[in-house]
Length: 363
Ligand SMILES: Cc1cc2nc3c(=O)[nH]c(=O)nc-3n(C[C@H](O)[C@H](O)[C@H](O)COP(=O)(O)OP(=O)(O)OC[C@H]3O[C@@H](n4cnc5c(N)ncnc54)[C@H](O)[C@@H]3O)c2cc1C
Image 1 (cartoon, rainbow, N blue to C red):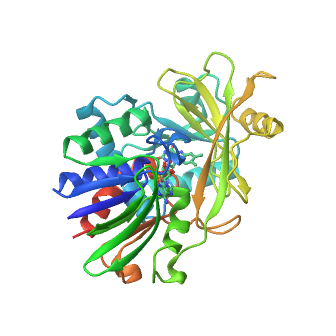
Image 2 (image 1 turned 180 degrees about the vertical axis):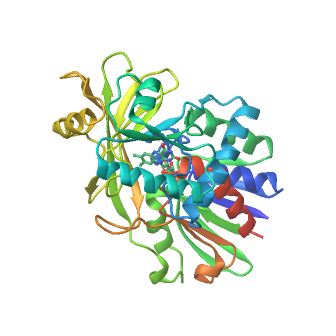
Image 3 (image 1 turned 90 degrees about the vertical axis):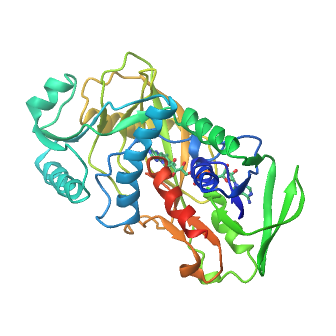
């Protein structure tokens, strides 16, 4: 089949590679001039264990399976990564109860090697930490996400696939037996495909609305939740990822590390109406307060605005977190069309597993 994938983020690239490995002819259309210019270059680069998500949900399933696939892929393709482990810390009795709930959830999700440890054991691992107990997840790690996406792109091209950059999908319609797709930009024109995957990230809903006859009630809301990061201008205090207990809309302001050992904090949750990537430096005030709950040694004036990413959420403040929405024919009635909505965290970790599911829907 001739397959069109819209979007060259981590999800589009993983889907394109999976489809090419199954023998399909694959073209990726990407509106910008390069890969990973959207949500995929603005995240924590954490390979998540799969601790938090409701058992049986798409997020739990794809995160745990995707993580195992991702470590294997990194090993076989020479992609930089480090299984550094993570501590979810409790600083009071109420948080300890929450962390215990996360442990039970993680166990139900089949996450390997997790254990509850006391405050002293946590401090033996990370001497600067202040907590009364923690959940240790040794399977959690960090990845060079750009290197990962370059490897996906390389394998796509090896299998004959290609990416059309600066090329946007404007609209499409199903004219049996094909999808007729109209492009604008560098490769403007109209082409026919057997199957289409909409992996347009923050643009997925807008694109779905431009599919002729696509049921309007099957396009979910798009709610934007910005996550701001602050860099730490000093020697890293931790060698593992340190997470507080989760907050509404996110996992809490946590310690993230990159492969060069640099430490930064974030992302927080800022509900916004329109895409915007500036960081208000005053948000640092709340960062100091939240970080000092588990790292009292955080020096004054050590945080500097770094970058931010926008979560493509399907639910808003106070509402239960939505699952990934992988909408194939059974969901909307249109043949060989998969729309991917709400692929926020842990989308990077889940990408190879999501790609398997999507490629399986195309036949
Ligand atoms: C703050 C934050 C932190 C995160 N941390 C983690 C983490 O640590 N671990 C983890 O596993 N996940 C994490 N995630 C989630 C992860 O980053 C995303 O799930 C993933 O990057 C989504 O990739 P995507 O390919 O769907 O979207 P994108 O990367 O946004 O790609 C979509 C692409 O589609 C293109 N496009 C849009 N419309 C069109 C069109 N009409 N025609 C052509 N092209 C189009 C865009 O230009 C873009 O390049 C985080 C997310 C955020 C926001």
